[in-house]
Image (cartoon, rainbow, N blue to C red; front, side):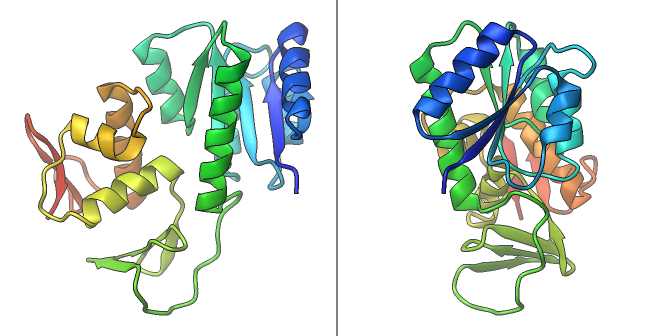
Length: 234
């Protein structure tokens, strides 16, 4: 089946070029002129969202925050700004990646392919159901958490905790290497591999992960901070 991509940009020229480029690669594409229209088109069949940050009626950040309440397909932001604070804001509302304008067609296609591949591996479009209670290789138990590496799902006290791909990989890293302190560089090399991200980005993902796990950052039960060194799980 064709992957379905929803793009939203208030600049018609950019919208048309991106749509033509993606359709040329065989993707099914829907286009919106602003964040509000993007929300009206969002549903569980969308495999990837490409949202311009600065749009009328509703910004890309605002649209992403609403989309994340129901859907978990990757979100790629398009922006004219490359500052760290903008990236932190984007990741805070549930974004997965940033592409700074002007960008090359090849760079866009590479990002799209990478996120669709990861989304397929992760297998999430909307809130998942609780997996069957079976114990087998690939299940990690830690306190009241149950991490399923095969299904890439997390439960806390039997309740599914929906994580993004990146959040899941960070938690998997910590739980499969208990007591090891991971520096920012360690986390970056293990989770992002060849993608360049800053320390602020990593900290935002860990903050979001703690929030979803209801882990108090001042007295964490799961992800602990080794001040000046990094993060770890007992």
